[in-house]
Image (cartoon, rainbow, N blue to C red; front, side):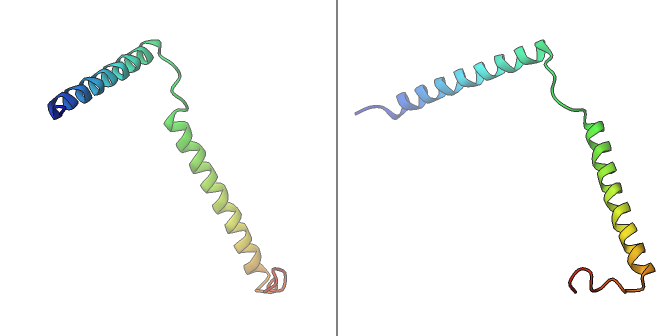
Length: 78
């Protein structure tokens, strides 16, 4: 019969080695200074511009519909 403590010790040793390897790998990446992707500021600017563009298009369509006084109801199959 095998001891459960022996299995636990083996599992902890394996987990500790994996954690140690991962931390060494991360430290190496930080030292090399790899590019980590887009700046969060530019991403926010792009998203805000896309939302503003969508609102302008929707507003323009709503203004065109209001100007036509509802005469566009047959265009979309309604």
